[in-house]
Each structure stands twice: as C-alpha cells, then as structure tokens.
Image 1 (spheres, one colour):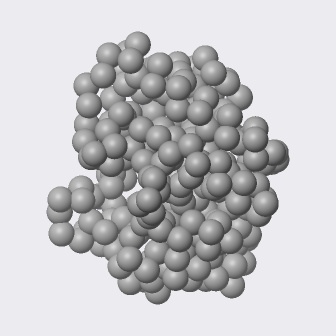
Image 2: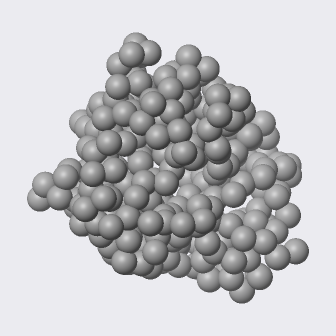
Length: 257
C-alpha cells in the first residue's frame, strides 16, 4: 500500500551563543518543523533564522509551545492555572507568528513540547487550556498530538483540526503510551531498526510494542528528534527507507505560506 506521511522535527532550540542540533541539514530532510517559541528554548533571532530557512525549503512550521521552563528544557511538569496556560500558549504562538510573517511564511499547526505534550495527552484540564489558547489566537491552527491519545478527540470536539503523531526513536507500551525515559529501552538507537519500524507503521499502521506484541497505531506524522546523537543521519535513513518503500513524504498541511 502506498501512502503519504509527514516527517517532523523539533528545531530552533538554540539560545544565544548556545546551539542545539543541525537545523539547516534537518530542514532538508523533514517536511514539517516544530519551532521552539522561547519558553523551553529558542530566542527571537533563532526563531527568525529558522523560519526563514524553513520557508526557503517549503517546510511547514508549527509552534512548539512549552511550559515556562528554560532551565529544565520544558521537561518538568508544572501545575499552571487555566488562565496562565491559556495566556502562555497565546504568547508563544504570537511570537512565532511574528517571526514567520517577517520570513514570508506562517504558523500552520501547534505541537506542545516535552512535559506539556505528555500531560495534555491524558489531562483534560490542561488540554482544555491549550485548546482554548489555540482557538483564541487562530482557530484554523492544527493541533498535533500523540496518536491514540484522548486530547485529539477533545480538540476535535472543540472545533480544532488535529493530526496524530508517532515517534521514530521511542519505544511504546502495549496500550500505546510512550515508555518513560526513566526506563531502560525507552529510546531506540539503531537507525536500520528504527527505519524498518517506521516503514511498517506508514504502510500497515502497526508498530511493535516493547513487549513484542503488535500495536495498531494510525499516525499522520512521524517525529524524528533533532537533538539526539546521530539525529541527522538517522532522519535521513528513515526518509530514504520510507521513499524506497513507496511512501511519499509531504506536510500534512496543504500550503505552508
């Protein structure tokens, strides 16, 4: 079966004199880029430069919104009030919208980052705040979330379009959750194994869970992390194997600008 799938990566995570990952090379591999908006990483200059590079390559841009936790890289859960989280989401999307306007492109979707992503997957209260923030600034934005998670149905019920995401280098539990990074084997490292898993996912909608059973997982986008060792070569191999297997790589949004 031939199908189309999106490849996305978390980019623009440098800050000041500190850089992370090879964003320019990764933008030649992926079809969508989740750009940090300053709360877990990223700064105005990095946002603008990365938006311009993405625009030049026809890569779709999403706002990678986070808890206000730069020191913890947005990976620590936070118990924000509803009003705080709504405002934080609006603020971050607005910052990236400004950079994209200057770069001649636009924000087309939102992908929460780190602890916020994991929390709203099952926490209806915080999910409602993120959804409200998106709807208030631009109800046409698409929410990207973990494939099979309740937040996607919650967002659709609120009137947002959604896209389901799978992670190339992460292990899954039989119930469809990501194995915690605190557990051994949570992160996969073999590019050939990972690429084969993603080809099967793209063509059959199935991925092997950590216990060896088959998990049905319908995903429209695959995340290839941009900050792990060998990230670029791994992403390139995934893209190569998908294309060789008859899968088309393309953004899930129709127009990027």
